[in-house]
Structures are given as C-alpha cells and as structure tokens.
Length: 170
Image (tube, rainbow, N blue to C red; front, side, top):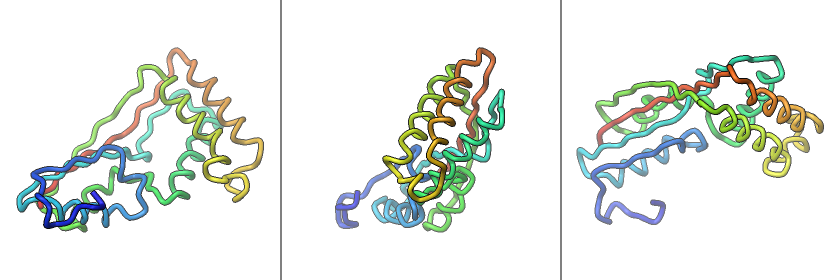
C-alpha cells in the first residue's frame, strides 16, 4: 500500500483487522487508505479495546500482568483503547457516515490467550528492552508469565475481550 499512488487503479473497499491499535499514527494510515479508495468506496476496521476486558478469576498478579502487556502496547506507540477511537479516527481521516458496533470475544480455551500473553511478556526484554528501559523489574516477566500459565488452567475461568468495528465511506 505504501508504494501505491492515487493514480493506480482505486479500490472499492478496504478492510483492517487488529492492526490500527499497533500504529503510532492510525489517522495518517487511514488517510492513506482513503486516498486509494474510489469515491464512495467503503472501509471496514476492527480493533480490540482493552478497557473492556472481562477476566475471572482475576487475582492481583493477573491484573498486573495484563497492565504490563498494555504498557508494552503504549510504549511501542500503540493504543490500548483503539476500538473505542475507531469512529473518531475515521472522521479525522475524512470518512463519512461512520458507523460503529461492538461485541465480546470469549476465549473458550484460556490457553490461547494465556500462553500468547505469557510469551509476549517473557520476550519483553529481548523485543522491547523493557527491563533495560525500567518498564519492569528483572524477575517480573517470568513471575507474570507464570501467573498467566497458572490462570489459564482454571476450568471455570473467563477471558472476554471487547472488539469494536467501524465502517465509513470515502
């Protein structure tokens, strides 16, 4: 998409899922996509909103692990509240008739989300320099990852994540 120009054949539609929350300037990216759409073209976007977690059981160490994961997202230029901001971003990028909707995704197998989060936290020093930068103490990534792995074995546990979708027209 970066190498395309408005002179290239324009698109009728564009779709983005689980991307905008990772970008430092999502509005600039949405403007770029808008420039590549035909007049009246449509965009659909979907991002999680981490303010809407439902987690059970939620001992303090699990809450700490989730908070640290969110910090990684923010420190790397992303947004943990991206879902709730999709409409605003589409408006700022020049889209019209923006419509939003939300839903929850429940992980039937807690190992899917628990192991993902555990591994990401364990890799925080290698990927992000989190200990070196003072975002977390040296022993904490292993402690938080272990807590996630214990939690994911809960037979009656719950992890539900809010997802927001939005559409707009060029």
